[in-house]
Length: 639
Image (tube, rainbow, N blue to C red; front, side, top):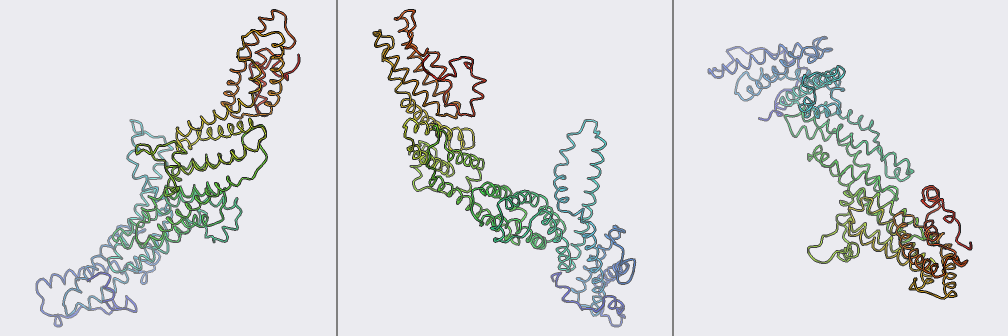
């Protein structure tokens, strides 16, 4: 018959000691005829009962002050182990008596049951004392750390010197740790021994309830010390972002400690103490950890359901990442059906955080589209919308793996067309397929570029429109190249948009400097009349002065693009003008003409000053190779 059913079979006593005092061995005249086998079994039963009675009554807390105030396991562990053995033997004897059809078995069973009640009361007291007095040794952090150290200890010895010597201080610390671990091992072994005895004797409920009350208080205290508190959705919504941000930061630290020490430590301890019963250890751990775990994994859902705002994005991604990265451990620790509600809560929070991320990204797209600034950026510089949007996207790209998971099911209406627009992919089966997050990022940048194109039309000077587009696209490309956006969008995307930057710059150059180029003859070495030469120089002087004056207010923030534009203009202008200048000087002889205001070197110096932002002037004035030239800083004009 099942062990746990034995207690319901037996008599109930007002006092176990009274039951024992009423017991007397029946006379032979009342006994049925004994077979040799029955006689042998009865002898074993009698011996088991008498051995158990001696040690059980010695430690009966109701009959001795010494037994009442003393811990058996603490006072004499060997005797404690003997106590357990005698109780187990008593329990086997009781099963044997129940299975026999004996005329006097019921009397002995009553007596044995009384002893068992006393023994269980003693073990329950011991179980409570061990749990209460060894909180430090059974602390979840200590248990989890001990388990981790045990798995790595063998590799540590390889780091010592050949002679095996250790620094004295390290030796002391090592000895201290070893001592603590030894105590922890003994305590856990004692708890397991008591639990197995009580469970096998049908007293699992008393043992488990005692364990759950004490251990749950420890888990609850650990959760409190981690700074986790129960919050309502309304309270979350009323919090200032600074306050909520601090709580999220605390949660990010708490989840690491909770999973790696608090819950895993309790899991290890529970598995050890109740190793004899899978169902008991699973239900016990679930009851102890459920409230704290739901508090831990429920907080992200509350944050995800609160008001949307762009500043929440990266904290939300951090929370999503923490749950996703720790999911194997979460699934392992809370693996049983009893803990399924915890796994479900973690997955719900993960899903809600993902929904919030997708919603914030959608809001970002709408905010780009609806940007209402109408004033053109001075000098064709980089728009604040470009700066803010690209900073946001580059930070987002640092969460590439997380975003890949969040946007895994994001499918645009016409994926193949988007791939063609963004990456120049063909429709062939061999061409690589862009991931959903790559397409999402590409789409956001395309939305930004379209918005910038509309803003470029606000410039009255068309050349500034192209300079504006070149500057902003160059900033975008630079951000992509130097961030994790590079891995999402790829080299083809960068090459394609760098080509567009060059196209915009070329159009700007043609429109801004076209009049200067047009003022020079097609064949600069051709011999002209003095009046023609004079007119050409005058037209060039006027065009160059006016263009230089206008371009001094233009900016190219990117050093690489700035150098490329100046080099392109200089290569054409200085070279072409230089040829004309030298040819006409040769024709005119040694006499310098007053209408020749600029030498080719002057042109180069004037060009070198262009396109710097005001903040760059200090470095230019100290680092420019031609900064000592008097013509380098003066405004072009009559000499």
